[in-house]
Image 1 (cartoon, helix red, strand yellow):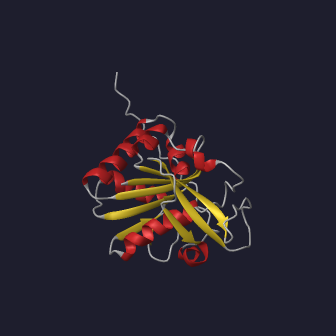
Image 2 (image 1 turned 30 degrees about the horizontal axis):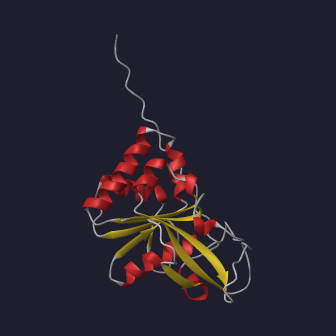
Image 3 (image 1 turned 180 degrees about the horizontal axis):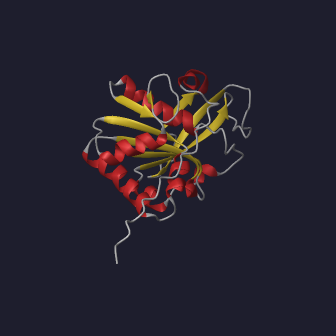
Length: 204
């Protein structure tokens, strides 16, 4: 399966109202899904620090996916758009990576989940192959929506499913319980663009 967690999704009915677009709980929701797999005995690899996963750089995880040497594992990729952008728009490398992601998830029981700020930041090829698109929303404990990114008050995160659409939240998280699973202040490093291979010159 491939899940995407987004800060905003244009046109989504759950997007309406006074809501924080940043700090809305997308990485917490991503982390929670990985944590559930971990508790069920599944290996988890991530490109950001958590208390339960194996930390690897984004480029290394991408190589592992493309080399097809993964089985029965869950991969968590925060800020996926940074890596996709580094590959270049509509490049062959980009298409090959997305093809590998889809192939791994279908044939080798590899679940690949990601988060990003905006729905449109993810390449259309990747969006089409995403099995579930989620939109987390942050609320105060009195069920009032929170519109402040770094609000100091306790929160719950209601995770809505945009595609396929579900009216009610698919799950609700207590931020005070699951926030300790990862470092919310960590900044995912921008991946280096892959080196272009030069074609050998032909002798005249």
